[in-house]
Amino acid sequence: MHRVLILGAGKIGALISGLLAESGAYDVQLADVDGAAAEAVAKAHGAANLKSFALDATAATALQRHLFAHPVDAVISSLPTTATLRSPRRRARPARTTSTSPRMWR
Image 1 (cartoon, one colour):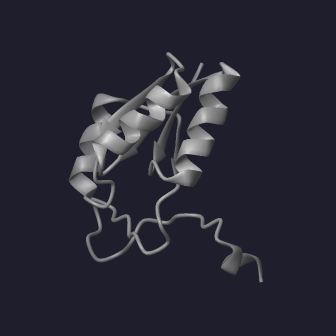
Image 2 (spheres, rainbow, N blue to C red):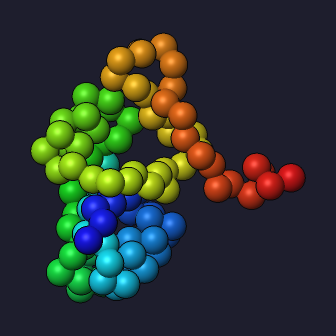
């Protein structure tokens, strides 16, 4: 089974986590700065392979600690485009992310 971490438990994160968990091919970790929001999404889907976590993904050390404790094969960000993920090794440079914002399609 593939292990995936989804950052953000909003509409997009809830949709992606549900689709992956319900496929049965993924162990899904859903993380949000509001742990109760992530837990509500996990409970709503009712999938045993969907776990919720309280995590501020914009804090590089918190994200690094989470990934060390809960290794994954892939990370999917459904964070707002205003959120900046920072690399723990290079404090001044944001980590590279891929945006799925419609603004990028123009």
